[in-house]
Amino acid sequence: MPVFVQLDGRPVILIGSGATAEAKRRLLERAGAMIVGEESDARLAIIAGDDPEPAAARLKARGILVNVADRPDLCDFTLPAIVERDPVTIAIGTGGASAGLAAALRQRFETMLPTSLGGLADALKGSRDAIRAHWPDASERRRAIGAALAGALDPLADQDAGAVERWLAMPGAQHAGTVRITLRSTDPDDLSLREARLLAQADRVTHRGDVPGTILIRARADAERIACEAPPANLPGLTVDLEMAI
Image (cartoon, rainbow, N blue to C red; front, side):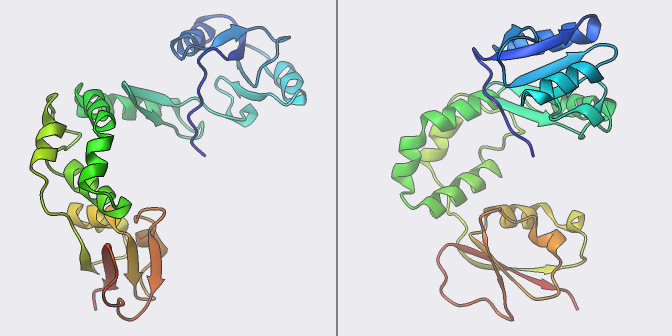
């Protein structure tokens, strides 16, 4: 399960020497961690060296979570490839299967994500009170932000410092009511961009019994899911109704 851990000022054990250990040291220092030796108290440890099994066993016996470089079989946690657009951090992991694949994906994301992305995140954070004032209802607010990020505030486009302020000055109409999607296949990769966005914004998903779970999982995690022959009328917020094409 992906988890972001606040390491600023916290001790992390680092064991090993050489280029790999130095790379781990730089990563920990960038995160603000206090790098300590094996005998110190810590919750996390990273081992980068030859014959890591004895050290890993000792640390695990103390209840410390361990990462061993290039040994996913010994790892309690893995270190992802990272794309940073402060305060936005994107972590790419393969469960230890291929560091090269994670690095290749990171390079793709580096070229895709504009340098202005962090500024957009800061602007949205700074506008929370204004956004709440525009949309007091949490569901409406979520839909408004989702629609903006799919259009006026597209995170993959360069956004200047005034983009959020302009959006708030001219908020467009947001999705509400019921939208029906007739699925052309059971493959979620066949969803159009619009369909994927609607599922990501829906307050609930109504669906026929033959709609597969691979499609339903593309909806928001907290969206209500209702198996029915027809969506109930007059539901609040945005309902996406799914049916399979005959």
